[in-house]
Amino acid sequence: MDLESHVRSCGHGGSLTHEADSHQSTTLKPIAHFGNESSSRPSARFSSVPEQTADHRSIIDAILDNCRRSTLPYQQAHRGDAFGTAFWFNDLVSEDDDSETYSQYLVPAGSLTRYDLAEIRLRRELSDTPMSANALMMPQFREGWTPLGDSGVSVLPAAVLHALARRKKWAWATDEITDGIAAKPEDIALLDDGPVPAYALGHDVGPDRTQREQAVVIGEVTRRGDGHGFVWGGHVPEGCAGAPVFVGLHLADRSFKLVCLGVLLPGEGEGATACHPVAAFDRIRTAVRALPQPSDATTATPAPSRWWRRRK
Image (cartoon, rainbow, N blue to C red; front, side, top):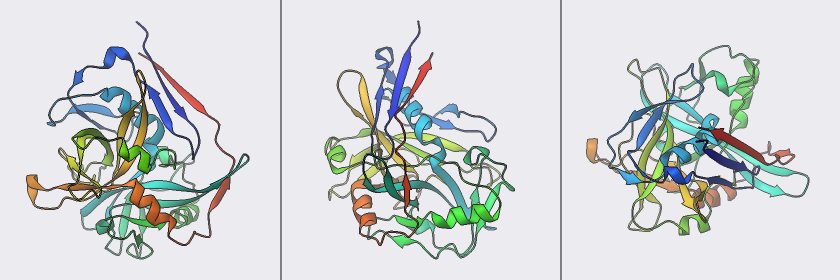
């Protein structure tokens, strides 16, 4: 039998809705998808997160179809530690019928930006032209970041990264977490207080400490007792702190809306008992919009609506 899934993208301001297949509304073991530098799609491994009822496959497909190129793995250069994940975020400043103006930032966990020389691991899909190396060095890395209050998140205007690529004679080709995907207060209000299935798109640390394969890590999020943000439940592989966290908001019938809930922060505590907060995008967006607008804000023609169709 042919089964079809549909994802709709509506530019920077539009949301993503997904029609899941009714045949897949079954109890599935959460899986972690680990990519390979030479493959176009990640392969799958099982994780030890408890079973839960969710259409994991449809949500993972929606994340990878729309956001696979939004993440960057980085680490402290020449040290082999302080591994993290960052992602591109387009903050919509204004829009009309003919154009959209947005400011672009790189978003990581703030505590993983406090060293002088960083190494960003590159992969071929992040440029339409050949790259000169497999890594990009960022000197004076700790400079230029703006902490977003007490959220645990910092941002860097993306012009810095575009300038580094231009010096190397190539240009970025990325996906971004856009205003339409980043959670709004009304999206967050729809989430239950109890555990909600969640998905982090990060970069694991391989055995040689240089291979940073992309992973969709499945866990769950629960609201914090103080009402500020969420807490991640489940294993977090090394290197995935700073990853964007996604949820699927169920709509009518078999549809759901893909939402980037926020940023997965480093664990608080030791070892297996570490608690990983998730900084929610409602506070991140408010803090970003309180910043002076970068001089390189981009005006672009709105992207046309696009449909992805997959037959199984």
